[in-house]
Amino acid sequence: MLKMKKKIGNSFGLAAVFTAAVSLYVILLAFYPSWFQNLEGKLWRNQSETLMDHAEYITTGSSLRLSEIQQLKNLRLFDHERYSRAESGEAMWIRIPSNILKQDYSIFSAQPYIRNFDIYFPIFTGRLTKYQNTEILSTGKVRGRSIHAFSHMPNSIDAEMPIYIRIEGPVQNPEFRTMLYEDFSIFENRLSLFFSVHFTVFLIIFLVNVILYYIFKEKSYLFHGLFQLFTTLSLYYYTSFGNRMYDMGTSFYYEEFQMLALVFMYFFLYDYLKVKNKGVRFKELYQGALAVTALSAFFILLTDHDWEMLITSVAVSISYLYIFLVALYTSMRKIRFSVWIPFATFVLMVSSILQSLSLLAYIESHVNISLMIFTAVLTEAVVFTYSIFYFIREQQAENAFLKNQVTTDHLTGLKNRYYLDKFAKDKMLLLEKSGKSTSMIILDIDFFKSVNDDFGHDKGDEVLQELARKLETTFRKEDSVTRLGGEEFIILLYDSNLKTAEHLAERARRIVELTDFGLKRPLTISLGVAEKQPGESFNELYKRADDALYTAKAMGRNQVRLSKESEFVPSLEVDP
Image (cartoon, rainbow, N blue to C red; front, side):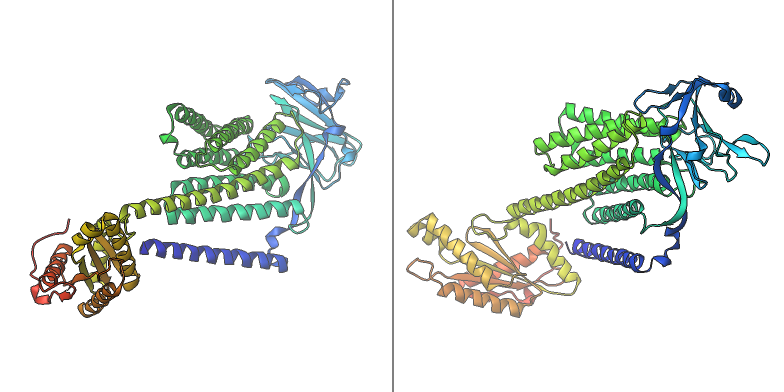
């Protein structure tokens, strides 16, 4: 227990230091923003301005070239409410007027799974205009897995000629938007500030889970912390491209982090809900969902497929729908879930489904979906972290109650023989190792059988209860007052020598003698006292104190007798 208190103290000390550091960071960020140059400068910022309202498109065979497309007259106006698709072996061509764009604009795909496309800009060379295919800085084939692929606007674009975008099928309902290259500050962009604050909160919650796991050794905290970590990483990369697109040269793993986060969510709920102890059908259904999610995660990790973003989103949506149903079911059955847990999972489910629908082009992609995802994860993080902590505290209280029931004498409320064997002996050994002494007092009520015979057993029980109250108030709180059974009691005096024990025993004898127990005659006790010697076992100490008690009874009762050091004879006996 002392080690646990020390560990909790150290952990909360670390948490306090971390909180102070974060607070200092926030204060400096607020009052001295110029110190954080990496948060300011020239950045690509998502304007969320669609180009499809001005676009025309046509679906053709994949072998057609730009020169052939320029001759076609049957391009159709793009309609968000109509279904537009190009199958494998086909290509979709999109034509956009150049004069609607500014020079500092960049074009990017708002559909994350669309990664293989070419943008042809009309470049004015002085006498004539030529179409050139610009470099796509980050596509599925060029630089790893990025959430968005985009291309910079050339400086010498001919505003009189249209821009062409070629997308290799399969593709459906593409969405291209603009970004603007401009001066950027986290304090002038509320969206980026929103993302930055959330990202910081996510990291704090992750560290809180790690600290709580270190304190309580509950795997639920470890799994939830890992879920929070991978979710934080996936959201960080998501926002890096969605709102601060300034570096497209690194490979990112949004889908992988998202799927790993989902796997750890399943592990967390498996441990938190004690699924292995549930019914066979519930357990098999849950394990099946976990297996499907794990296989999807391995597929995303081991393959590089153009549709992996779509697969991930659909898998996540279905999984969170299932998790919401599990949360709702367990809440209704009152299985470790309170009513607000399903709400947190419901927000997660809705946000993931909306994201899938936007990827499938059933609804228009919008920045509010990203905001909802962040809010959902933050809600889940706070709710589940508090929930685990709440139920661990509840479980600890229940364990403490059960421990108290097992170690307490139900008649008197004192500790019982089980407590003496289980805990008191260990405490005596610890005191001996630290050079401190322990003394034992054994007392017995004189002529207690006559109390039961003359007044009945109910009155005898009342006498025992009143005597227990007197003993508890007579001795110190740190001492152990125990009822062995019947009318016999043991008091262990920690860090007390024989002289102190004799004084306390004599005081207890006099208090009992002067107490009115309603018997119309005094009630007295006899006491035997012994001090533990180095190397002496509990049973040897008990025998010496019991012999002293026997001497007190033989000498006329109602007195205190001591066991001297010379009476201790070391033996080979070992406590069980």
